[in-house]
Amino acid sequence: MTMTSDNAPANLDDPKNVRRWLQSNHPKQFALLDNFEIELRLGRFSSSREGSSIASGAQGSSTSSRYQYGRDRRLVTTRTVELLRAIIGPTRWKTAAQLLTLLRGLGNELHAAGGYREPALGCVVRRIMYAVRDEADRFSVPHSSGVDDMEKIDELTEHVSSKLRVSAGKELSLASMLWAHPQHVTMKHFRQPSGDYSDRLRSDSMGSESGANATSSIDGWDASGAIYPPHFYSRRDDLRQSVMEAIQEMMSELEDLHKNINEQATQHIHAGEIILTYALSKTVELFLKAAAAKKRKFQVIVCEGAPHFGGHSMAKSLAEAGIDTTVIHDAATFAIMARVNKVLLPAHAVLANGGLIAPSGSNMVALAAKHNSVPVVTVAGMFKLCPMYPHEGQDTLNDLISPSSVIDYSLMGDPVLSEVELVNPVHDYIPPQLIDLYITNIGGFQPSYIYRLLAEYYHSDDWETFE
Image (cartoon, rainbow, N blue to C red):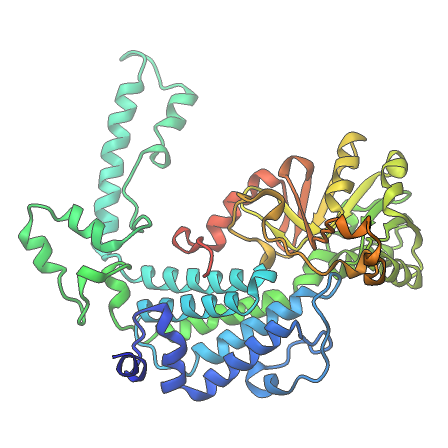
């Protein structure tokens, strides 16, 4: 029985079948995915290739670097988008439901291969899934429904307005007029809430056989096992082109990422300021260099970022650009914070509650800044926006690595040190109350606004973590 089920042709109806479906129907795309997963497992991604195509040269990357802070995460994200474009374009999916299943399966594959270390990989998959849902919903609403809803809005507006009048002889107050506006009237939205669509279908059609019969079959769609709205199972010839255009927009956004962030440098960095940053970050480095290129004279203090000491490379690069730079020990952060005007922190991920995942040791810097009332600013691209809440506290999106960078293994023979448990985390979680501003490629936002950005970039049904 096992051999029969394993050898049976896979259908694109379950994310668990995506790998077998690619292997049996699209061996070339399967090879691209397999090679990408190998590089991801080994922590190898070329940092010298920018904008190169996965489809043409993903299988022979000789230049590689280990997973570490300071490497441009945008390049890793760009390669992921290229991989998704190379797989989605030629494969033979037919409906939005099949494409969403394919993307969900690819997200699970990348997560299992080590994508949990790079939350941006799952984020770009979710963004494409949002584009698919948006495109499928765009042509699902009948044209007459808009007119009907406008008539309902007019009726409700008139009803609310009549209730809010103080008396027959007085005009509406400004507050009454605002609250009588149609946008404050609860209306039924076309997009269905999250959950199993078959459950909603059963609850909506109880006692209505005609409604059940009308929606029981759409192009072979079986309502009993549906997890998407019925129009997601209808074939659309123009869906592929629309999705590929959305992917190309993501590629353009990633290409112009640093340019759009650096244009805001002069708005946040002023002459004569003392700016403190932590460890090594390509985005922060380019941001500071962009301000210096506009003839802004300022001083930068770089925490060395032990035990990886990325701050040394950061300080060297800034000094070569003509910026007055000083390197300090991490332990001296609190002592010097009183002289600092602003703190710039790098980002590994921005969480749904406005919290930040940053290099290990950043939480100490943020706490010192809070104590001295120094504003903390994070510079990050929108591809790092992650729809995840820090339910695990400091363990959220964290990774423990070998303590060999903290203490030499030869010293572990000491009877005292042998009883010591050494923990070497890669990340720190910084709560939103310690962050004052996020500078992104689309503008600056406070942590309290992050949840609004999530609704613009991801669909709520796709927020769950890939498995």
